[in-house]
Image (cartoon, rainbow, N blue to C red; front, side, top):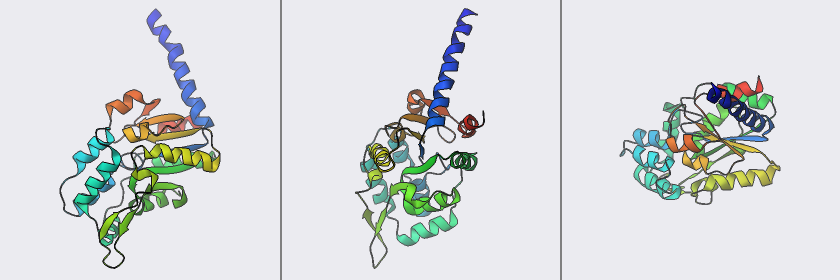
Length: 234
């Protein structure tokens, strides 16, 4: 019994820490693939383009086994999507949104919390997702395809985007703080790239996939976005 009672203050303090960080946050930055939505954008695009499966490269990247820039280039060299491929993919493959994400974004906006999407995915695929959540594209940090002006074939990606770099999400967090003057930013995501974003508080999300190393190192780990929304209600 003594051991059980001894755990109560610890659990209470842990809740207070979560409450303090979430309620006082200036902004929330969300990963997109396997966080905001259940999809992995590039994996699904590869299937749409009928090329080799790239999901193993994606998994190893999210687990921190491959540097992000190298992984991104490797996957795109396999897919080589044309502009037409991307447009038709978006039209026929709407994102499957994660449970309770729409409600959480509404709650955050209602409580005057700024919301950003910070993704290693691509703007042209993320745009419909941002629109459905009432998040302007000016608050989306993601990668950009480069297509040939005449043929519209894939020729590369913009390597100047922070999110195309290894450790790029940390640069995004730093940029947002400098641009908006924010002091307390929360990052939410499922992968090592999110964990390494150097936010003031990291919430690991396991509602789609659970990365054990992310779960172990997160300041708070959830499997339902309602857990965050409830902090603004209780």
